[in-house]
Image (tube, rainbow, N blue to C red):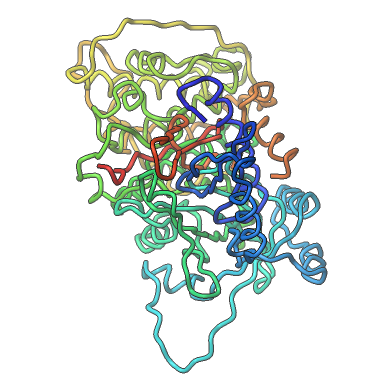
Length: 591
């Protein structure tokens, strides 16, 4: 168990993976394991704050210690062993009612729902009626105060779930699981998120954030129908205990229920629809910031697609949704000094300066807007490219898109409304986004060391004319105040607010149908790689499992600490190697 050796690290990694599998497959607040090496054993208790390990003991010389542990464990109730009492196996009648549901919004919803029911055991999750959110509470932005009186207790709401759509691969951190859930009372499908949240002053429960945003009329966000800490039959809240030994915050078990069962961003059908969905997400981000909330975890996995039939005209439409506000901060929180030199977000989409110069810049609006640009690149690329760290910073500083897409405006054979003007598509949009980043980074030259110039370009072959749906209402109102930056002009921090990037997307979406160049959607170019989203989903399905653990909060790299000089040993571990959201470090008890 010496973590300063390669063998010790491998052993801890293997044990962590076993614990992660246990936590993935069951609804547990904590669990116990035993590590045996030759004639020595260690007792281990895992929860979302970390791992607490006993001192090693010789179970040959002291067999009574192991006997006593197993005897006491056998005498425990399921709840004392860590089982969640709010989750019980569904009855055959409940499963039958769940299978009988047919009111699907789309074929995608049907496939996802039936897949979760047929491939995993069905359980019933009980949510207190007090946690449900009414339309009035949504408009007011806060829950009604609970009044004590003579009224009889309201029974909890029941939600039936099968196999999760995604879940964490780490035994520590938020342990997020996402389900397409059947709401028994309303006979509908909802999205249920089961996770753990840190108890920290600047971390806000996601349900409260949604209430705040809806009270400020923020568009293109999900609608909460229930949220709250998980409470057992005795009124106790599920919390962790390992933080007493490993430091860091205490974690609380939390559930969030959303009205929309949205599709991942990768389910877009055309390049125009992709840009339209991204426009919705950026607008949601702008309106949230006007409500003094900064998302701080913009990624391809936190932008979703909502397809719906418009009740007014019966036409199928789609919106983008900006979701997963678990790492957000209010404007008042951003004014506080950072405790540590760290950053939050999903690594692939974090601002380049936050990656290269951690601690030099406080997380600001422009870092999130840069993350939107990286989402554009990542979704369009979906192939091998060393895109991170210094390479990312160089690209942004010099305004170079990392690639040219197949298809673009270079094919003169494609029809145009005006044959003297080139068409417009994703290639041109990405170049304009790169130009925005270039100007913003140029305005930061006084704060960023001079970098070596690198650039490369490739030709863009032909594409096809696009089929564009009716334009979204409100488009055409935004105007750009800058074009591609010229070196002799003073650079402006054009990403310091949303106006320029939204105007750029607005102009793109106002392109005439005959001038928009559609880029055909290709099969996932990342599917062949071990840690691709497709590979993660396949792995999760094979192991009885947004996106595997893409909402999970774990340390940026596995942290493993072990105390061996008396008293209880302890460690913090992470077995996750997925694309994950990284929360900022919080002060430990030692600090």
